[in-house]
Image (cartoon, rainbow, N blue to C red; front, side, top):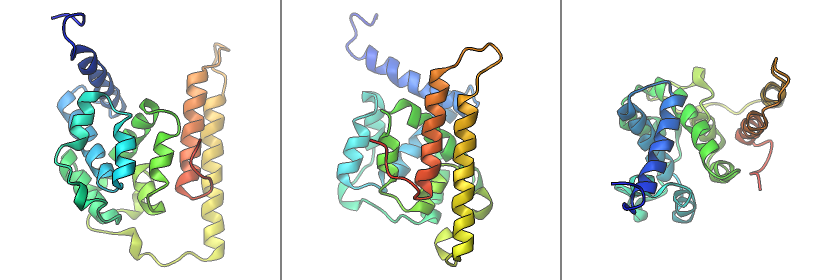
Length: 215
């Protein structure tokens, strides 16, 4: 049945494109693996949003993935706890990976979804989450996360440590932006790569609370 005679075909096609983007990002040809990772990300993020934010996020999804997003959703039970340990437990179980692997995987899916959603959508969503959970969703702080551990138990940083952390975030954001703005050997600037680099740099700053959501 062609797209002209099947009203569901365009929606299925778009969902396949999004799934293919996730598969490419996590470097797998197994669409079932990509589907698990995408579903784990959607449900783990969804459960930590209020009803209003979840509705806005779901509106960005292809129709088929929107159904996946709301699968098993109980409005009266959200948002759930924002602690890192529970997020990693939920995401790793759904994705079929270890909690240690979940951090990097979540970060890759986040980057992919940020490129697929409207500009700034991920920033608005993550602004509602605690900074430490944003780090996990960005795939950062790998050395501080282990199975069953929670970053919420860490002692507060001193002023010097906090300044150093912020400077490191600024350095990482600038390096990301510069890399994206570099001209390739061909001399032809890729505006898409530049825009993607700007988004990544903004999300690094957002995770540190150094900027607000993009508008």
